[in-house]
Amino acid sequence: MKKKYFLNANIIDPKNSIDEVGGLIISEEGKIEAVGKKVNKNNIPSREKYIDLKDKYLFPGLVDMRVFVGEPGYEYKENFKTLSNAAIAGGVTSVVTMPNTSPVIDNVSIVDFLKRRGRDKAKINIFPAASMTKNLEGTNMTEFGLLKNKGIVGFTDGSKTIQNTRLMSRIMRSAYDLDCLIMQHAEDQELSQNGLVNDGIISTKLGLQGIPDLAEKIIIERDLTLLEDFNCRYHISQISSAKSIDVISQKKNNVNFTTGVSINNLSLNENDIGDFRTFLKLSPPLRTEEDRVSLVKAINKGLIDVIVSDHKPEDEESKRLTFSQAATGASGIETLLALSLELFHNGSVKLFKLIELLTNNPAKILKINKGNLSVGNDADFCIVDIYKPWIVKKEKIISKSKNTCIEDKKLQGLVTNTFVKGEELFKI
Image (cartoon, rainbow, N blue to C red; front, side):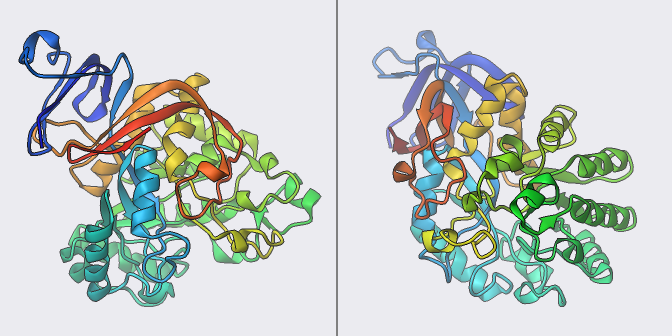
């Protein structure tokens, strides 16, 4: 690999507190050799060719903490190859894959298979999460110690919640002893059972069973109370309501934990569902505009640490059904950055803060050395024309499943190039 030089970029790297016009040098080994304002035309060899980025933005490769991949078992929805292609088109270079596969990622032999497949088929960095309970049944814990030694970065039951309080306390105790990360999807089963959308005016109008925000709040309150006794690494996968933010705000001073939010809940509300648009059947559900605004304010107050895509590809047959029968979830990894930039363009969140929630913060929570432009690290980064307008079209979606919830949406901010380990893997 030849050494590469990039000049005249707006570089943002929250980990290293970089927010300046400068350049980037990639070594022959695909590592970052130098970055920032000190890299300019005057201090690179005159005989070397360089790439003039003409004030485009250069960000560390995004780290997406919540991605569902169909492999193994559901390859017809998504596999490592198609996931990689979709991810790099959106500037995402590292992902945490959920264990909701067939078979479930709950033992070391499946982890070995997953890592081999990821290494052979994926172009991006794959960090698998394992399930907290065997077969996602919520009854028996998995072998945290053995799985962590195999390279598992965190434990979650994916789109399921640990309902049993005694089991949750055991999980937290083990996680504390072994320094494991717990990622909880917060939803009380009794309150959310058979629910399809947010419980409120829209659910009544559509005649659909609602999921109250109380279902989320109760689990968060329970877990954060347990956390006072079992101070493990705990992450709320994604919140959706103002009530949850109130609880988080109250508990922040007492216990250590982190919080995520789906870009869908930051950008859309229950009114977008319209007349039974099944592509907007999500978990957690889209809630009120007041809830959405509260989530945005919570980012600015430092109450939310991470933005995720909650990428959950579903085949068209699973979505082209009645609302009650349709599968839950949306494809979103390749629009994560562009949709997040909407919050910058409308003045809701500063750009540096957004990039921090998409790069450095998730990497820090996961304890992985990604999402930054530190000298000596793999050159994983994306180049973005943040003012370039474009429209989300189903036929142009790279993911194997096309179930985007923002079809025909006008966005501003386009990834033009993505590099992984110094190699250009995506270019428009």
